[in-house]
Length: 339
Ligand code: SAM
Ligand code: DTB
Ligand code: SF4
Image 1 (cartoon, rainbow, N blue to C red):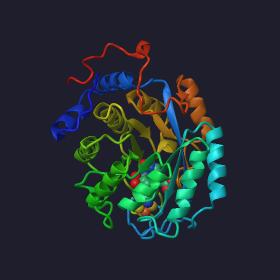
Image 2: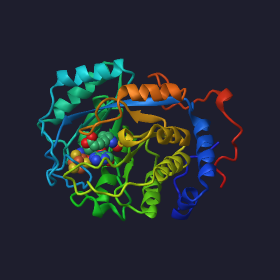
Image 3: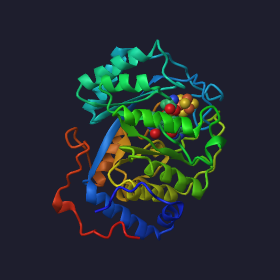
Image 4: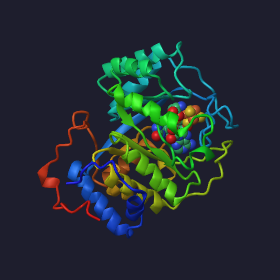
């Protein structure tokens, strides 16, 4: 049974990446079966609660005020709208409702309203996640008190490549916010983006940073860059889909108990690539017509794909942190983690 390690070296991560593709997938899928039902996919639904005009300069992001993406700016949405969107997402099978705001950090005027939104979503019996930028200790503990289950704050890329993509907030700032979230007792949702022009070593370093945190993030979103017109990365070179699949597989092996989310970028991904991602250990997706501002894979396409692959959306009760497995599903893979 794979142990949770926090001492990965770059050489070890690269050795996993460099395994023959089929060996890597076999190993990752074996680890996946040790901890999860390989047929179950967790659905999260996204809502942008404050759109555009962000003071940060993240090179991939259409919501940055530094770039010229064609985007309608929106003020904080109303509580009623949040609740009706959350209800609809729940009816469609989402177990988690995630709200994102284009802020550097939450401000004193809007933060109490976000706390009300969290309480409202919790009142519907859903898990709740928010991503609001950097936090201080008091904000983290207020979020916890409001009942927040997850906080999303991504590392995005390797520490070495980071300042080619973002200059207004440091990699260390991100680690500090993550520490505050962890210390407040909120589950951490933290991952990155591929296709930013990063190199192989950057992808390994990103996964190494994630896995070597004091605790593995509970959710690990792996985004494929959505190239948006008007952003500095609108013409970034596409990456080989098999590199994306390899990244999912390596993340699964390094963080065996975490939910690995096949996140942004599914709209442009073909069904076979997504199927390979699920085999490699992805067990969560964003479900619904829209991500924050960009289109997502259509719900009917997702449902058809799940059916064709004999997968099913997780139920709330099963989507927890008690990874008790049905022994009938466990294969003899004691050696799954030995190189
Ligand atoms: N403003 C907050 C922050 O950055 O912490 C929260 C919202 S932000 C949009 C959340 C994450 O979405 C980013 O960290 C990034 O990983 C991802 N993201 C943003 N734009 C993207 C794009 N064009 N393609 C893929 N992922 C993207
Ligand atoms: C994450 O890792 N991906 C989501 C969520 N966390 C907040 C956001 C993806 C955004 C894609 C671009 C957009 O919709 O603006
Ligand atoms: Fe702002 Fe978040 Fe977009 Fe960066 S990723 S520009 S912080 S909304």
